[in-house]
Image (tube, rainbow, N blue to C red; front, side, top):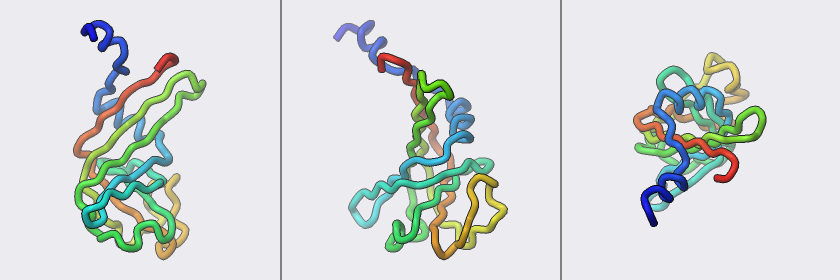
Length: 136
């Protein structure tokens, strides 16, 4: 394909700063990690907490996952308020289990009972994002 056509077909990339600001709006997404040699992708809720991302999986989702899953990926989609466009953000980083989640995590990420949920803190090592408008 001619280079001009490829340029039109590629959605605009977002800067790491824009990805970080969009992550502050995200409430859910998917966490990808490895269990043994097999990939595992789980639906999670999320909240930006300073320089890391807190992700929470529901009961039983991570029962056999090590508390130190290592390198993971997190993906989310944030729609614009008018629904005319959306942004997709991908985080790559290292995850570690939060042993005793408390109620002082970001307010919109309430912990009801630490026995009913698994929380990971994910570093923001690599942020990548794209913007999609009508036609994409």
